Length: 217
Image (cartoon, rainbow, N blue to C red; front, side, top):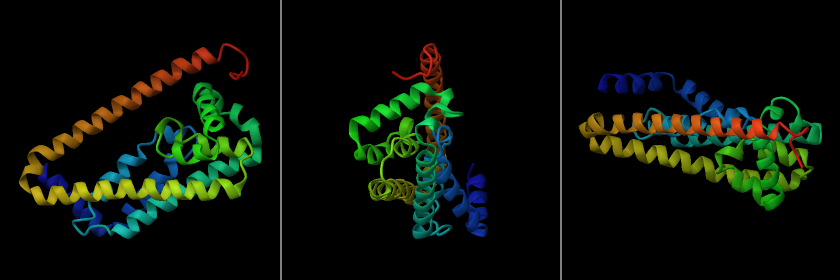
């Protein structure tokens, strides 16, 4: 296990640009409509941020990659919704998840502009609220400031969490080899289980909501 960890650190040290690209893509894809709810972008960002204390990656570039990726992902989703308007909410792939789309629409109507901020921290609707905001006509001058503030806080929390975990790993030394890595594996397994349960529940809701035409009241 130790050798694998050293190999990973060595690889990232030699290919830091690939690690930054992976963080950027993870943040970008996590904001993609529907697909973002399936991509473990947060886990990738936290895991690679843990290599910052070792010097393999820099804190500022990691934070910048996560922030820019999330901003571009949310911004692209918003403009797709704004250009296509409400019709995009009932077209593929959104049409396959009517329950999630309905939840996002209700979230937006309930909280207004604040929904854009809150959704960044709520995985089930995070990947749907930006496109919903665009589709429902939220002005760009309202969307972008709120979204930028949310993304900056979101990215900082994730990168700091990973950095602190990496720092703790270095401080504990050998103990991490025996306890930390199995714990991380357990957390990943639990995360996969949660994602599986969420998808199963979403499909059940989608099947129920697909009975009436359109899926919306």
